[in-house]
Image 1 (cartoon, rainbow, N blue to C red):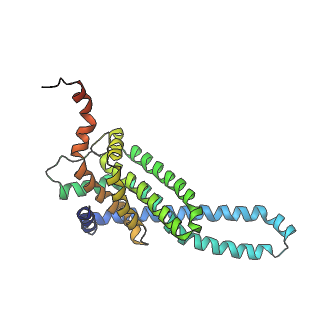
Image 2: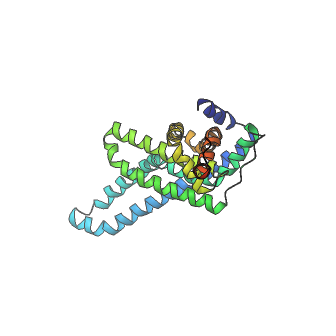
Image 3: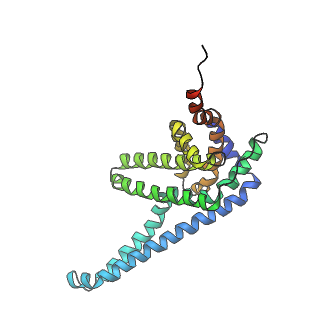
Length: 249
């Protein structure tokens, strides 16, 4: 697994990956900015809607200190969002560039193997949106535990490892297997996939560098899938044949 991580990191700096890196970073930043604008507008709407009540209850100077407080919260929110939302954002971004990245990895490291088949854009987008929404839900559940610094950080890391391991492995596996079979393959090797997800979770926790998570995560999981796909695929197909075959004394 360390060798797979090393190969993924080394290939990130090659010329074919640079174009994908710029596109994925641009899309990730655009999504974060859109989320930031949405959150700030929701806060502004809340302040405007509650303004008359606050002035009546607290005083006419309420708007001044509330606006000041909101400005601080929004500024801190952009920084916190870059950490808290980045795993979900990169999972969404990865769905658009996974095939392009995987194709480069397969061409360089596995030229003798049959190439994978790119996922339909709609299917890839659906998978990305599903995992991003699931990530947000899980992170919101973990959020209260961040008050307990150690426990919250551990829960957040483990949730990220599970979700990103699942996302990137399935995107790599679905180039060679039908979606149901790719998911079954992940379940069979859930321990390996989760451990690999820990590598991706560590990567996505580094500010700035985490913008390149789609490249690292996809390339890394292509190597992990290549390592385990042969045996488990036969296990998924052959048990019914084995059960119906006559036993040889």
